[in-house]
Image (tube, rainbow, N blue to C red; front, side, top):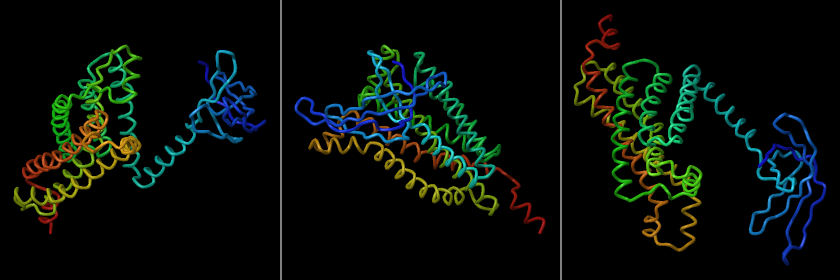
Length: 342
């Protein structure tokens, strides 16, 4: 199917016609189309309401995607959304740099590295038929150190955060493998998974793909909590070089507990928000909560959410313990040097 981008120039005609005994709206539109060679063509397109569909009225100046039919006529298939997405991306990048300055630039670089590894390594490897879980774990092993050091610099604190993240991710991954099997999840719960299976002739392990998605979704949340915990332990130790191991760990974990409660709540709300239309659909079907929970598409999200939450819960004590052990071995700190000089 040939597709082109086009801009609506004017509405030639609009109104309603009777089809199969029902009134159906239509618009006859004049469009300025641009092909792959950047040459412009003026086209006239009939846009009519399909049965049982939501009617969309187009206005002059709007950008759309058009597709050529077998009879050489053209139809509008969708809005052109890239300009809006690019504008939002620019706003995001400008704000990150304006607020974060040099560290904001580094965080954008680390984001670019993450996308490069996901789209340049992980996805092509999965499409080639390799095990999605193994590929994603290897990709995560590249994403974590490269993005952490780009975002937070080379330091003992970052080393600890990387180690804590890798350990937490591995434990959460093992838990995901166990309960995806225990819950008999197949990975076929969504329409996208079914289409992918057909398109790739069952060349992709969809259960492994489900696990891979859980691992990737964990990366960002673990970054926040592990770096924060390692940094707080370092600050506590530098402010009080004589602090004991137990007190350092306990005081740092008080902050970690606050972090856990807020992050777990955030994670669950994010997944609930993403699944809101689906939840409303089941609610409208008058199904009981237990019946809804037993559906695979809901069980997928439940396992994803709970495994992610467990990963966050594990990351705080693991990283705090690592940081406490390492910083307690530091004989001379910034704070003690300043104390000696005075």
